[in-house]
Image 1 (cartoon, one colour):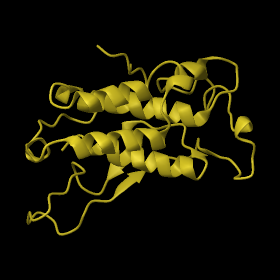
Image 2 (spheres, rainbow, N blue to C red):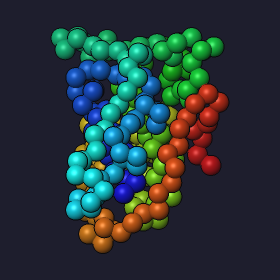
Image 3 (cartoon, rainbow, N blue to C red):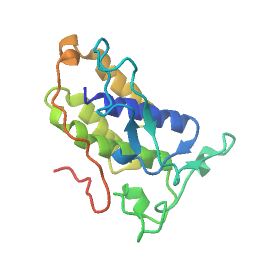
Image 4 (cartoon, one colour):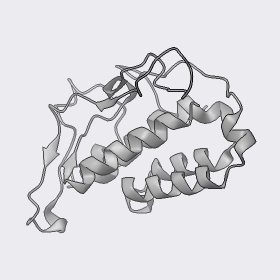
Length: 185
């Protein structure tokens, strides 16, 4: 199912954040799977191994010391100068003020995956609602990655088996590069 990707990769981001690592470049081109579509169907002869999932491209990541004061776990501006940085920025990145890179990561994940699952809104609207909350403009209103994982798992746990077992039309992954917009259409 296409809804697996936001859940699996949000779990990975929560793991990074639990270890005080903010990635700062969480867009689809940095989410990889060992399988072409990232899905594994138990019992099918196509493969005997579960896919592995990877978050790559850590050159802009920051790691904070476990004994650091949470109030000091901030960054300013984009990871590179604006003339080089071409990713869609979360609103707080546009200011000169220090901001929480963990909340910016959550914004990037939410915005990235909205495009991938928005076509199933009529089947599972709660998933899109969570992703929209993750990508709200106000950083203080965003869920943490760990909270988002919990919310996504709660939605999946409530879904009836017929929804989970039914095929969902798969769309091509949306990759965001220079000049791409994350505005909802």
